[in-house]
Length: 290
Image 1: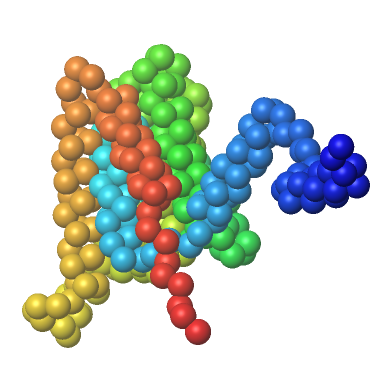
Image 2: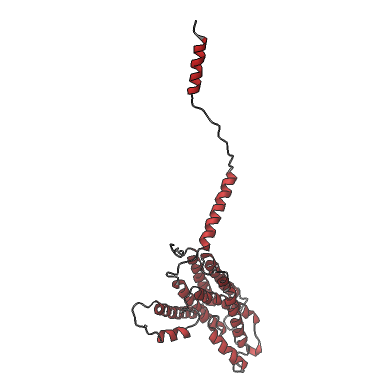
C-alpha cells in the first residue's frame, strides 16, 4: 500500500515546480483609435514642417524669378491697358499727367494708374503682416503667400479670357467712355505685386526689389566691387535685370500673338505656383548648437 502522504507531497512539489502564469491586463485598442492617432501624428509633423524657418541659401533664386513675373505682367498689361501693375513709378507719372490734363487721348487713363498704385499699397500692407507675427520666413507662410499671389493672377487672366474685360483696346477712351470693369484685373495684378516685393524685404534681399530697376542700376554702377569675382549682391542685381528684361520681352511677345494677354498671365501664375511649391519643400534653417 503506497504511502498517501508521500504521494501528496510529491504532487505538491510538482505543482510548485510548474511556471506561474500571470494574468496581464488587456487593452482594447480599436482600429479607429489607431487611425485617429495616425492622423494626429501626420498633422503634427505637417505643422512642424510648415512652421520651420527656411534657410536663405539659394533663396534669392525664387526672388529673382519674381522679377521675371513682374516683367511678364508689366509688359503685357501695358501693351493692353497702357498701365503698369508692378512699376509704380511709371504709374505715378501717368497719374500726374492726368492731373495736368496732358492725356487728352485717354482722359481716364489716370484712374487706372491710381487704382494700380492703391492696390499695390494694399498688397504691401496685407503681406507685410506676416512680419509682425514673426512667421514671415516659415515654409507655410511663404508657400501660402505665393499661392495666393498666383490665384490673384489667375483671377485676372480668367476675367480677360472670359471677355469680362475688353482686350486689347481698353484704354482708348473713345468719346470719353471708360470701361471701369478693366480696373478689376489691374487691382488683382497690382495687389499680388506688393506681395513679392514685401517677401524680398522680409528675406533680406533688398538688392532685388523685383518690381523696379532704377535703384538696381544705381547700385550696380556705384558698386566699388563691381568687377570682383565673388560678389553675390552684384550677381543678384544682374539676375534681376536679366529677369525683368526676359519677362518683359516674353510678356510683350505673347500679348501680341493670337493667345493674347491671358496666356501671358497664365504663364506668370504658373511661375508663382512653382515658387509656392518650392517654398513648401525648402530646406530648413540650420539649428545652432549651444
